[in-house]
Image (cartoon, rainbow over all chains, first blue to last red; front, side, top):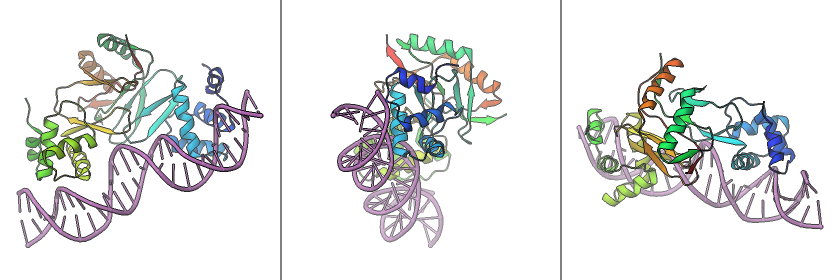
Length: 137
Length: 137
DNA sequence: GTAACTGCAAAGTATTTGCAGGCCT
DNA sequence: AGGCCTGCAAATACTTTGCAGTTAC
């Protein structure tokens, strides 16, 4: 495993308040894609001394520091996940809202190829397969 | 070229009010990705007899009928484009917000392959390359 | 000690909706 | 004619922010 979120926060010199610790722990223990409200619920369960506003401020801060990735699944709210989770992509079933994680080696190469073709350089791994109308076979 | 938006509306039996005609025309004449506010501005320029609420209702209706695609570029508002535009994908520069359209044959095959692997079937062509941190070379 | 952080509530965006009147077919 | 559509404004949903008090370092 790679460093915990808290370790990365410390490495970046972030002041670790009680609230930030709790939010970091919640995120470390999540392998799904919680939105702010859900994070707030999980964090409040551990420590009620926390507000929704702080959740919003914290995830934004963590994202700016590259600790979290912000995801959008098309339902109008932002979702969050540890930027250090093993690389994977998301496939969203627009009818059910189901999120499927997957990995594909070709995507790695393709990301690189397309970016290069367009005169860009990839500095991260996040990619979304987005908005594909799907039906179960 | 394929059918106009208005033709597809008629084919689907949608009542063509003055407002819907104007919005359809604006969309037919757009090759970018306007949001609701921008569509409202362009439509108002042609005919001031239109409200923002109607723009929202109309794009939602058109999307449900498969006439428009809804895009999300990570800035919190929905963007719209004709679902019949030539197939292409979007690469978003998260720093500048710049949207780059591109086409890549491998993506076609990859979409199909991944969907199949996961037990899904693609019924459309829309895909987004999303959330990739980029830097100009 | 002091600058950064937090809770609370109010403000800000983007989008949706109830209602009374207007317009396609 | 009759139901669908529209404008307006209020409501909703998500997120941000001003301020006064609190806390990490």
